Length: 468
Image 1 (tube, rainbow, N blue to C red):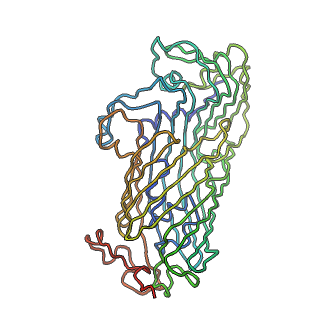
Image 2: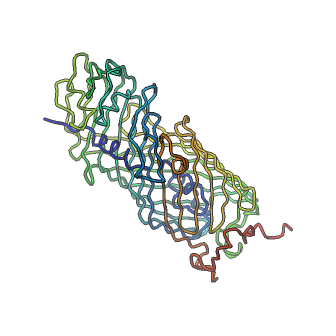
Image 3: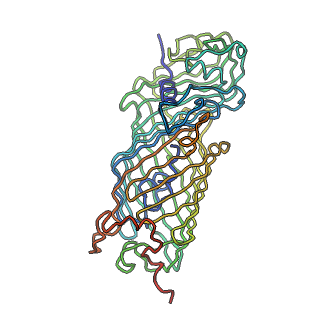
């Protein structure tokens, strides 16, 4: 009997050719894209800049590795992407793949309350600590003679999975006095599993040949659910809080209320903290799992690292039964400072919360700082990020009214070189910046917009009121 443990192997190795974003920094921090922001912290939709944000569609793809790269390539000309290569001088190899497709979603501000929902498909896959030779075997490539022999592995793993989710968000202003404002929010999510695979080895010894890698000893766990709609199901929750130091008195403040001329009071700075994707998926449809501890020759175990599947042996003892994985939990924190005249500075932290021996794919850690220029109809930012706290990269994003486009690594599009990261994200929305209770001509998206408004330094808001 053949067990195909890693449809994720197909997912990872296929997406290595097509994937292009990790946290989509631009849409996560822009005050005029609250639907995207609530994915990291649902409390941001309370006191959101647009009264109603209708997100029509969006996607983002991200690939990053410190081991695998495309030789002499640039995304400016996809046809010029060179051969896939692997470095052999890395002791801590890792590969990260992240994909997001967002369907129609929305958020709306109703007084001190805000409501939102989103529909999305997501996929995450990662590999860590696997020897480069094993990665080349997985990719179906030959290993040169000088790299054959035995390799030891500790806490090695390769994991991946896809799921659809529907989330409902609620946020509220819980404190507003003088110039202090606090909002809290939560998102309840329903997950629908679309397939999963994982292979972990707490410790193992690998014999590397030219086209195969054979385990001599291994101690760990393998799990697999074939790709199918509703392969599993589960629930998740994101909760967050945001503190803002406002530029005006908010004691009697109601966002988009007539007392504020139907706009929102800007902040001097804000601090947000959240726990994202706290949840689980239980896989049932044709799910298989094995806990193995081999102290002798386990030649068939090599199939776990190849497309051919996991061959049944006494060492593996696979069981056809359901198993549970956690979602890609993360702690997020954000600091945003408003210098005035549309100039902002943002710092964003995403720290994964996951066990190396767990079955779910791990999202990448990220630390980013981003200066940006932000107005109602235009935003431009330049994020500088550290992925897994080790790989620095320079990105760029912009928004014109409802269209947002960005990348975390702009050099992949500019310079032809050995390319490690590759990503892009695009989102399209219809923003309604004033509530329907405000009977003005600015009630429709883009109303009265002129190209020169992109460079307009004076933006009507509460900041323009006299200080007396």
